[in-house]
Length: 382
Image (tube, rainbow, N blue to C red; front, side, top):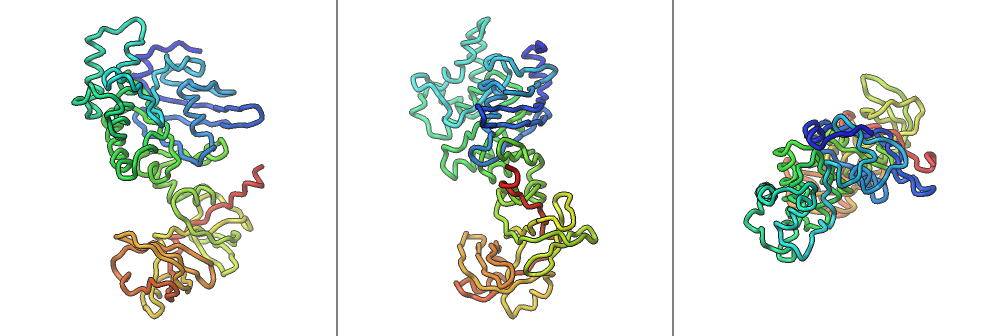
């Protein structure tokens, strides 16, 4: 392993992961994961419970040893470097604050353990700077039990940042907060990361959290990264039907590839032939799903002339609806493509629609609002 000084790593901050794997006996928790991060990237590891994202984070932090692969930071390899020597710090899900220490002592704990010793005046200066960064410099003598959940989270952040890491690892740090505070802290974390200019690797199973905060999202499934891209690209061009269903809400119509024309892929379904934009390379006859986002569907009254502007339509009745202030979410049972979810902003022609259960409606969409995604079959993979 190439020896690298902390200053060199912090200065460069480029992270490269090559073929990282972790097995526990016959169970492969992480399988051949590779990615690289430019300094200043907000990178989310997103996936359901048990997909391997926390195990991957632990290997980056040095809390788990990989079964195979390499981790490079800056100009050198840190795969075998002990956790306490790595210029990466971790914010844990439950913060792990010392209850008997006040805020300032919690934040400065790691600095006091360093050898050779850091001068007391420098520790105080760095702790105060870290507390100012998270807007807690007015509460240095409070104990964790005297703080709110959001304040405890800020203390954990300050403690991780006080050592000037080149990469900050965050293991679902917002999961213990209530819904409104989570939204507020998402904005604060993103702002903090932007000001610091260091990379954040953020583990979450919350799709909305990842979409709203990250510059890049790596979706994990069964220990592997199945798609690594920007939030907009992930939402609009999912790699397969599993990713499409995991990211937000999606309606699916099963079919097979019938052909391609004018960059649209035709899909033969039981309800007829529909077109959409393919999100991956597809072959004629391949099993696929026509994927339709609820917000890209429109609802029309049965006698509305506006429905004639939609390229594709399906008649049906409202099965259920829920009011969300600025929008209505409907489930419509159609005659041709089954039950679909539709999201309607309360503007325009929404007042013309009968939202009562059993109300007749027309669902409409355009071909370029549909996506054609490969069908993922877990049984076939195993």
